[in-house]
Image (cartoon, rainbow over all chains, first blue to last red; front, side, top):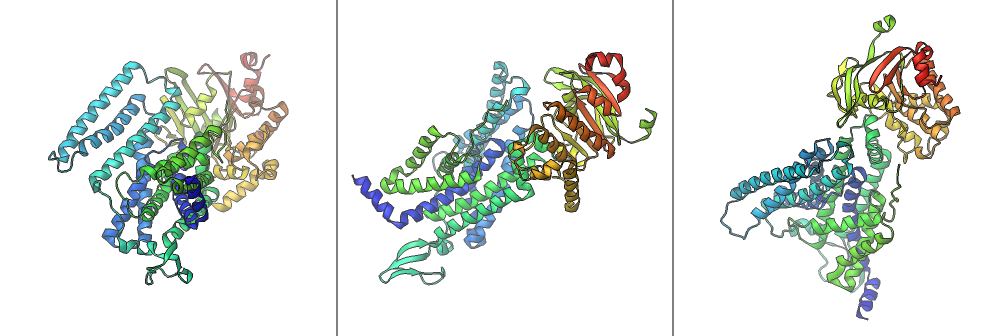
Length: 394
Length: 243
């Protein structure tokens, strides 16, 4: 019963709880982005993980080139990601929401998905490969055009276009596939821009975050409120500044978010759009602006989460870094009840605890525990903890 | 007609054709609503009444002809622009935001307005028109009864301070006593001098209160005239009033 002993140790060790809460806070911040977008346009935004990655790179760039402290870098990344989120919606998803003829929709899917796949294929050659990037891009572009033509012709021949009135379901599917395409596309862009090597925040910049807030010394627990003071070298860390910062960031941002959604005009418009977009238009609400705003908020949260995540694990900034936290936070959003903000926070925390305690038992399976919990839970309650069973409407 | 011609035309449909997919529903209809007028559109199921309203508010595209709001062709309007320019709709089936409170629904009705005092005054005004809504202002709109929901939908539409109010089948699915109540409210709106375009299946009620009426039959307008006149019209009586 070795695993039981490890679990017992983990339960008695405050470090596990601290770790769980930190992870959970990060997942909650990411899960909110999934859940809000799903709530309003019923789309699982698979490119959300890439927003995390872009936010982290932007934070890193800000630290490296502008020499700003990390806290300011987080703010810069939030603003930049808000813009990226809106651009993502306008370029990738908005065209699908307009009532385009089916052929155009399929062409867009072909364009985005195909472009991502082909660029990925043509640009991730061996290191030192002599084939010029421009050359590969041209080849890739030609292949995309061919694929587009092929897909729309095939679809036309097979009569996939259907009648224009009952295309709601397939429109959602088109958006979903586009999201996957955008995810690959952004990843590949990051590859081209920053290469695939691992990077991390410079030690000097991360110093405040890495310094100890509470530490165990031979004289007992020591509180060190000043992160700029001389480091406690021999002491065993109990609580680090970055952990406290993560909790506080999560708490503050969630309160701000709930106030926005419940009290402000734009928040009410967001809820109205989530309930009934047609009627929201009748109120004079420009639904597309509200959706873009939703993407902006979710993406800003993802930027915070990304930077705190890479600070937490110490490095790990690379083009595919968004995948794991993204997919786990998605599981958290589903567990909590997708579409509900409180559910996303709750789900994030639960997944964080599962991963931390599961990891204490079997380190390499920490993520499997998190997914396992989600899978088992949604077998019995597919709408999640706080979600509502979708009522069949006539 | 001569009196109408002098006053300002608020909404005008000029030889409008529209429909869904390959099906053409409206086959070139022309009608107009002047300031301060209550105009109703009656017709049987499937005649194209709702399509007419959906075409006006941009849900269904105009294929030929023009829809004009205060003389401006609305073809290039975004849908929020219609509301900005003074058009407000009470959609068929109420379409309240059911998981939001009555008060929040009213606030959303005033979404485009920025004059806080004016909004507060208008809210007091609709609460005085519908006292039951004041009692229920913090309840979820979905928890209201059918009649209350219809009142809430009308109140919400009034909150944008519209220059023209479109109503789509306000009496649909309501008990006769509630239908009477809704029409009393419409009378009040008429007395306030509001411009109303009403689409109704309940032809008798609609025609008896309207200044003018249009009769729609399979996508064509077959009659038009003052409400009282249509009420007396032999064919209209036979087809829509069951006599």
